[in-house]
Length: 290
Ligand code: AMP
Ligand code: ZN
Ligand code: FE
Ligand code: FE
Image (cartoon, rainbow, N blue to C red; front, top):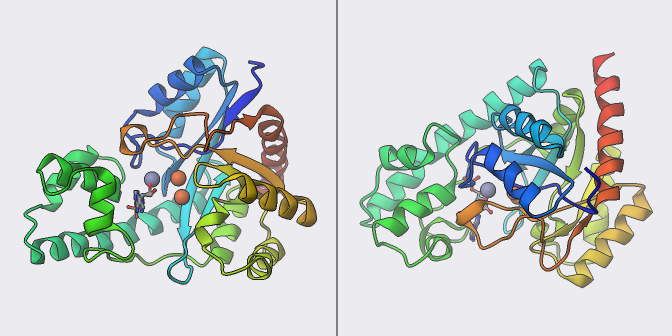
């Protein structure tokens, strides 16, 4: 398909989105996008279904994953891996590790909520997740349904956000290790939404990016729903300086967030960025197999 715009960052029910993978693909087609990458948290379980539907509808598709890495509070560092090989043992080890970290964290969040007088259980969270990866947005949806909060956003502000009382951290990989595992899985590692690093100044941001580049980072998410025009310009310049691929995405989660597929803070993501990323992923896959 030859439309001019794409979306390289979105979530399905395989993690904490509200649309099944095939429906995300259908929505992409409805919105006139020509390519999509699915980037669920910690899993590629949605990728096969999405790829099949994309092929059926003639939408170009790249498998992806989003990994939360270690980073000092109040920032967060998320790494996107594009074109990872679903059959690679490294990728399986990676997702097993990430899901185990979640499994240890989640009951801590429930215990904290219970201590705060919020009657909610692991069973209710699991019911909302329907066998998929448990993320905080689904728990937020449960809290909303039970009337404890006025919205998903309110659930994060009151209980689940990083600075809120029911927050619990999960063990994470270091960014360097996450990059290494994406590379070993035949994928291209990309720094997601650099705005969320919450760096104090540009010099600090540059030092962080340089260190990641030294460890094999291949790209940077220039366009994202949380990034304004100044941010986009800054990250675009960083990409050029370090010879990084540019990527962009909405971070669509379905009804869990007020974000439209294919649109990131009013911007669209050019098709050329998908083509360069797909080409790099093909090369990375070849390297990893040798
Ligand atoms: P988890 O992977 O379970 O830690 O949940 C992460 C998800 O929660 C991501 O999709 C985030 O975008 C979402 N999230 C984190 N903080 C907030 C917030 N303050 N408001 C809304 N969503 C959030
Ligand atoms: Zn999410
Ligand atoms: Fe993220
Ligand atoms: Fe995301």
